[in-house]
Structure formats: C-alpha cells, structure tokens
Image (cartoon, rainbow, N blue to C red; front, side, top):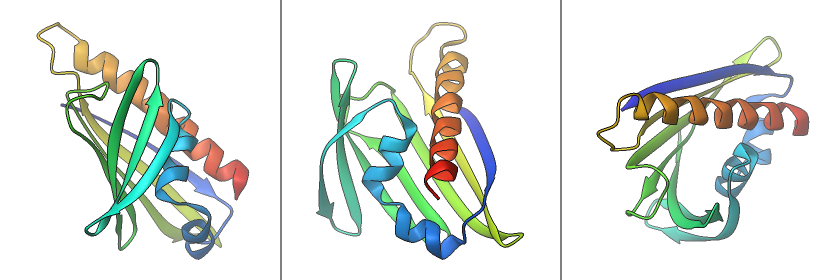
Length: 134
C-alpha cells in the first residue's frame, strides 16, 4: 500500500463545506469517474461510479470530522483503495486534508508508487474543486 496526501486551506467554514459536499460530490470532484447512482447501506452511502471502461462501488461513511471512503468489490481500478477527507476550522475558513492509501496488487516494481502518483493528482483535483465551489 502506498499512502499519499494533499491539504489545502478553503475560505469556507466546516459547516458550509458539510452542506456543500456529499458522497457523490466527493467522487465527482476527484474528476476521474462519473457517478452512476447512490444507495444507502447500513451506516454508509454506496456510490456506483464509471469511467475508463470500469464500473465499481465506493462505500462512503461520514465521520466526526469529514468522510471516509473505500473501493468495494473486485471490479475497481485498484486492488485496494481507501481515502479519508477531513475538515477542520482554520483562520475563519477550513483546512481540508485528504489522505489515501492505495495498492494495485501487482508484483511489478513501482506499481504502487505509480498508483500513488495518480491518486495524489485526484486528491489535489478534489481539493481544488472544493475550494472553487466554496
């Protein structure tokens, strides 16, 4: 597993961001997949996404300080992927941090490093879009 992160100040309060963001919005803001649908499941929202010839599910749970989501099933682009997005008050706005752990599950040198590089780009795009919309 490779861990990557991105962090950004956003000129909106945590309450404003909680109203703006939803499980589907988090995935759409990353920019790699289109949301096909959502459904409630226990204490989570399952978001079905598609893109690049793939369709798979992400299980999103709300936490005290943000959201946590992970790829479920075996049809996704990664062997395993989990992400936490946290929002905390900072300077009359918010500090938004996204941390993701990802693995391609391939016995190829640098495979997880390449997956991490791609994932870091998605996290940065997520934070940029949040800042633009807030």
